[in-house]
Image (tube, rainbow, N blue to C red; front, side, top):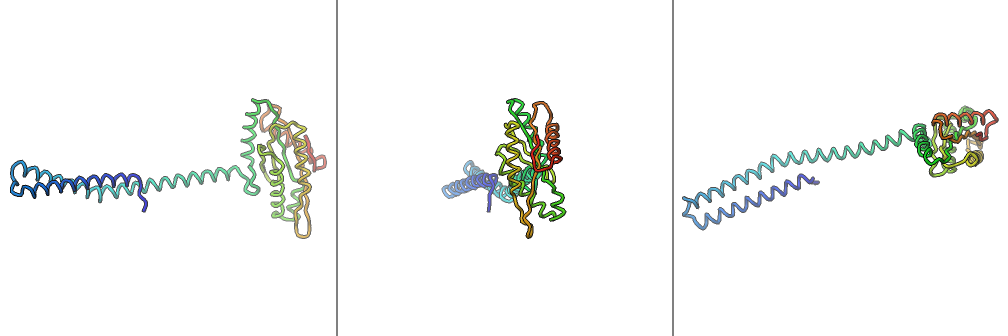
Length: 259
C-alpha cells in the first residue's frame, strides 16, 4: 500500500497526539493512585483537567483518524492521479509532435519540418556568411512503377530511396520526404560544386539499387535539382529555384543533376 507525503505527515501528527494522550492518562492515573482521598480542592481540579485533556486528545485522535485522514488520502490519491495524467499527456504530446513532423512511411522528416529547418538554417547562415544549399530529388517514371507493379512495390521503392538518402547525407543535413516520390535535402556549408558532387554520388547509388519483384529485378533512377542560397531570397524562392532545376533535369532526359 502506497502512502503519500501528506498521509505520512498526518500519521506523524496523530502519533504525537496519541503520545500526548498517553502521557495525560499516565499522569492522571499516577496522581489518582497517590492521592485517592484528595478528590476535592486544587488537586482534584488538576486531575479533572488532566482527564478533560485526555478526553479532548482522544476526541482529536478519533476525528483526525476517521474524518481528516480519509479526506487527506482522497486528495493525495487525486493529486497522484493528476500527476500520472500529466506525465501521460506530456508523453503523448511528444509522440504527437514527433508524428506531426515525421513521414510515417520512411521515417524521414516531412514538409513541415523541412520548411521550419530551412528557415532556421537561413537565419543562422545569414550571420556567418557561409553557403547553404538544397536539393530536390524525384524518382523517374514513378507513376509507371505504381501502375505496373502496384503501390506496395512503389512504397518499397520510396523506402529504398529514403534509406539511400540517409546513407549519403551528413548528420547535420536535413532530409525530408515532401510529398509522393519527391524528397528534399538541406545541405549546409557546401559550394555549388560540392553540392553537385554529393547529388551525383546519391544519384549513382540509387541507380545501383535493385528491387526484387517476382522474377523481375526492378531498377530506378532519380533526377535532382540543386540550388545555393544567394543570402537574400526567401526559403520559398530558394525552393522554387531548386524545383525549377529539377524540372530541367527531367526535361533533359532524367537520371541527372541540374544546377
